[in-house]
Length: 159
Image (cartoon, rainbow, N blue to C red; front, side):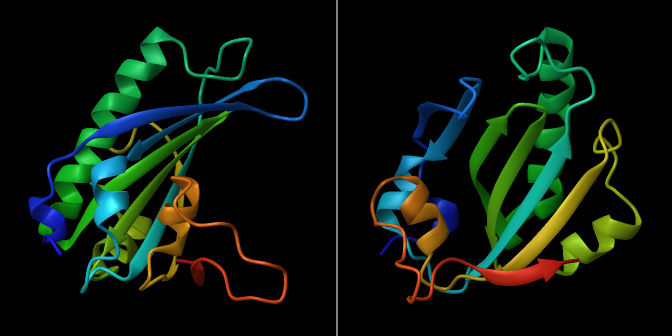
């Protein structure tokens, strides 16, 4: 199994729609999903960002996309070698980032003081254990979602 941080990224775009027909765009690092789980990175961190000025379809417009790119790069830089961004999900009015990490110490610090470049949008963090990477593997279509009586993805809470 390849080390998480040495897997070359291969992003794919998945598209869906909400019940009311509005677009949902999911970017998944397929290379990481296919090579998962990765030992030592069993913590799943979700970071949710409320969009400031979504377009009529609920997705970010050109100016907000630029601000989100700066936000995302600052987030990736701040996580560093303790984790990896593996997916982004854009829903009407919201962008969510999915990170797998070896620690959540950085996320706890962010809740108090966001890193430089991550102040353009307010965000919330949730974290939990997912040592088998079920969350990403289900999102990528590599595993079926759990049945109601089976354990599923990360169990955790807000930081």
